Length: 268
Image (cartoon, rainbow, N blue to C red; front, side, top):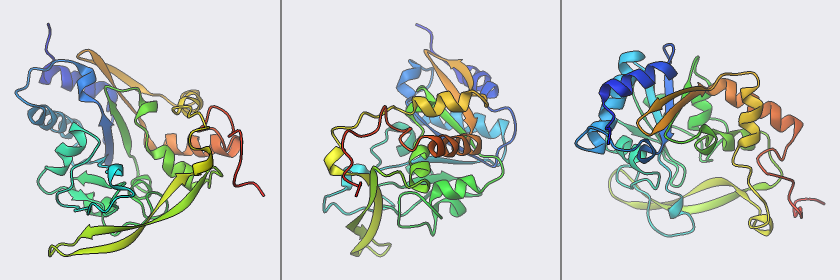
């Protein structure tokens, strides 16, 4: 059995990072790459960050550190201690010295690097939209998105930012009054907002898993791919993808779905 090494990581990431980027959003599933030559996932992820920064110095890295499992519960969200439901990459970021985590109790993002404060502080109380971490990421000059071990259509949560911006009709704004652990240890309830699917159609709709978006995007823009271990790593320009998603939603507001909902509780 072959174990992939730092040299393999460097070769693969040089194939998908072709220039300097001010920020890189990274997510995925390390397990899909198979066995590696490192003592731990922490050592593996430290190596990946080292490789990225060698290729693109001073790049700020960001990932999603969601805790959707807290929604509709009374479990307090502690930005400093609550682990993410998103696995190894997310929780590595959360344990990284100097990281900055956004404040939303269900859809937080965490960044490492010189732009971390800009990306993940003083954000909106909404998951997406103006002044969300994704909105800040898109305001940068040249952000890149990397998917590790998983096809990019399965890791692109930025599509929900596009849905929010375009006011897709099958979602509405829901308010959550959730307990938050403050820096001094006090717990206070605060209001936050999510863009959720109407309950009446939640189990009726069929999600397209972003296939339409990536088909449309790939007709005009490259998706860089490299083999690593037993899997692949992918990259694409974040702003190009977002703009492409907006264009497709202008043509088909139901592009996130396989087909329009069979009933439309929002229609009057």
